[in-house]
Image 1 (cartoon, rainbow, N blue to C red):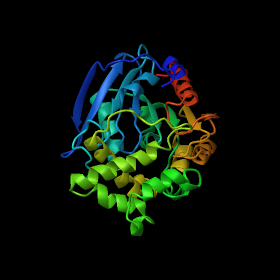
Image 2 (tube, rainbow, N blue to C red; image 1 turned 180 degrees about the horizontal axis):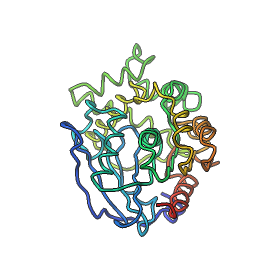
Image 3 (tube, rainbow, N blue to C red; image 1 turned 30 degrees about the horizontal axis):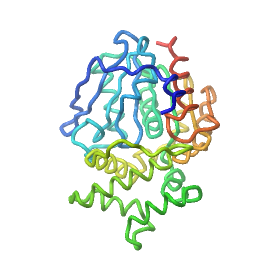
Image 4 (cartoon, helix red, strand yellow; image 1 turned 120 degrees about the vertical axis):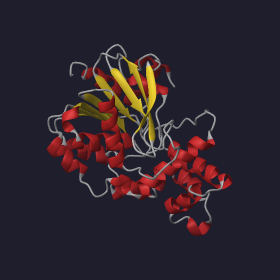
Length: 318
């Protein structure tokens, strides 16, 4: 991470409380609270689907001002069971967010989500608009067919090498449909098959995240990688359970009075800018920031700056 990014994020903080909430007979979701327990609340919605939260994500928010809540979505991160896809849909996650809000006795809160988290944030806000003070959305994704087709094929126009690396992991006869081929592999019961396939699947997305890709030096945890791949593939196979909805129209109708900031990397190869642009047309009141020298990652300098600026901009709202 560059010194520039380090200086723009708030200092590292630790949760003052963490726990698990039993949201249905199968799933327990992990959540944590940071910052100022008496301040206005903000909930962070992570991407993926499948990624889980990490400590850096606490740092987009002024800890002296905000009561910051992060949670790992069903099957993700520290939530249990790891990688579980039964009872795991967008509607389930929206219900979990609302359960967390009520469990913590929060009347209204700010909602912050990037990539898949932007889809979930919009889904939640359109379902519970009266509970949302503001929205900060990054790397907009609405799971429409052309967006999925881009990620699962047309991306080779810009990343032929990464696409080939993904597909050449598979037998030649299965390369025309890598999503279904990797579904078969990562949902195998054999860890000698499912974990290597999951690592390979996740590495593909990681390789196209940033304008300048810096490979991670973090150690690989096979169980975490498997859970992430299983949840993500499950969601993609079902168009993230929003394919039947027109979230642009819903946002236009239900969120016209919700203060909103949209942050988008100009060279985002995971979630191309067209969707963010269309969301801004549907929500013309929103502040729209097109970062000229960024890809998809929230941690690229311009994107990071814009996200911190957005959370600071909404400090006066409660």
